Length: 398
Image 1 (cartoon, rainbow, N blue to C red):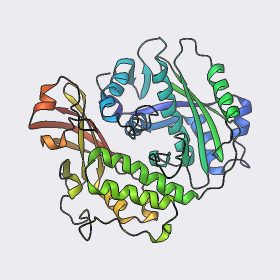
Image 2 (image 1 turned 90 degrees about the vertical axis):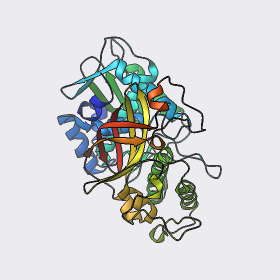
Image 3 (image 1 turned 180 degrees about the vertical axis):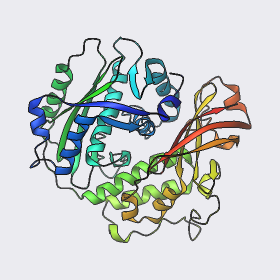
Image 4 (image 1 turned 135 degrees about the vertical axis):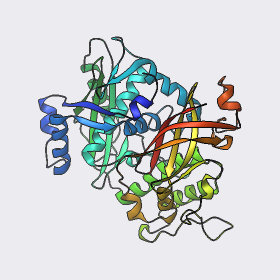
């Protein structure tokens, strides 16, 4: 595979199976699970799961327990995460598969397993990436486990595994799921799932399991709002870490967590020394002043370019419409973000300020590419894909 571009412009077919007949009966129990969730799951097993490459990359890059977007070394790890896919996987006829019939490193198989499991459960519950817990660390309150998602009917807890063994045996990962569950003092989720993704030289297959779970008493709407805002916070601080919006948004997240606000009457976010943010004025938002901004009738997005490999960068950005929703703090609008995949073409000179050349703590990224890290301008060319307000694209530079 030449780059992430082959994934992002494709759709990926994933085979879905029940682990066995016992788990099928448990997972299809409509007294335990919502009827619409059961029907979507049965249809996935019948027809398979088809995901946009944009979605796969979002989960793969952002929801990585070791190197996800909330981690301080996320920027430095983008090239290595890209290289993992480039070196070990290929995609043809909408099938993502490993290149050689060898067992892959455990960290790779685990993360593929996490990504695919989350994608499958997201489809069943009609939730999205922003609904999986991305609560930033807080000194005031214990944060939630990364395996939790918040739906409108309850909390979902997922224990996801992956295996790429030459002779695939599902007993070891399934036993791990049950042992981990048994050793937990309590489960946070109302719906507790297990998934095992097998990775071979033809396709990806995800097996679904039903370990026992316990209900919990949570303010689901407040959790969903906090979760989505926290996810957007992580993306925004990658794009414009010095923007005053970042700290203001975190203060609001903490206040919502601590029940200082009624969700139905949240005030707009406001800058400290000005009456309002200018994001709805029609002009280029100040948030993107040191980033790239694309302004057209079809789409208004802003973001930054991150190094992937020589000649290629990863664009991460957000749609201006999503930025407005974050500032306006209308809960119903935040929870109803659900946009179809669209795309735009970029082909222009970009100033150095929009090109990420340092780590989050201001240190120069240690990559020997004088063109990317030393040019005052770069010609950026490629297609950016936008879904649910998030823009991702593999962009060539020269």
